[in-house]
Image (cartoon, rainbow, N blue to C red; front, side, top):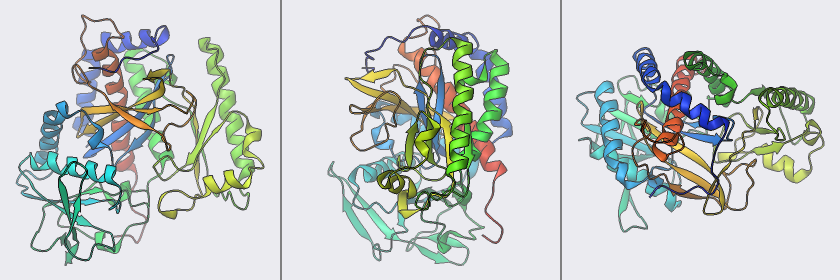
Length: 429
């Protein structure tokens, strides 16, 4: 069953969804032309926020870690999409090496790894798991909660090729976002397909670069269907040379926050929106919802207390925060089982393959939901996100999810542009 939302979304968003539905053929044709010019990442997930008056992405993950939260009914779609990706990258591929995060004790993440491996094996690939963890010095079996197990093996480097003992893959798929940096063992692999590329990891990637690319995509798409691009695009700015511990960069941060809040207020007046604007300050590199702060007034970022500064100073793998992105806050008016919810849409190649609601019963509609206490509700699509039903109302599940799928694919296209426009720093092979 599709989760029933306790809020009946109406008003401008229904008009926006109707615009998507009325232009579905144009949208699909335009996206198809874009994929002829740009190569999508192998996979990705997009966090969306649905404010009723606005539907926008707020984060794009190129190393998605929640495949275990997808509805099992969409496993065939995942397999088909993965097969399409593999055929384009290495049509004769037989062996694939999957490199996960070093979370050998995180049972939820390991279920994700198992699901990715299962999808890839169903495409006809022999899949082995190679670990970057220094703890994995010999083949190690990890038991999963469902009774299955994973075999993690130490990586073996031979010249410019990487594998595990007795296994030489054509393709290497990273499910490790490289927050701790790019290890030497991954550098200079010229004779194998490494996906995503090294500069997609957080050692190099910046969220502000992604949303700069999304600006271009949203602008072109908005012209295509005749909407204000702001309705699918959050304003953003960035600040470099931040040091929360030493209170460096506070003036830059306060100025950027104030500027964005002014722009949002003007848009709210233009569209007749009676809401309090806010922005989200978060680390420009990193994931797992760390280093995130909601701000409603520029004064809030001056004189942060020690607890707030500690929270914002370090993200995953102990990575110090020196750059932040200030992003327009987009409320979510959706609820599932009494908890505030936001949809997360998953894609493989250029196809939407499923998703889930991130739900938090202790957070408000203008707060970060990617925090301890969250849980997930699979999106049990009646049809997939790319099959709208013109016979239904705009807010019927297939059509609402179509709108989600369109915006998610715009973010995926932006990720393609982002990767084309960036590269490893000079001197990094």
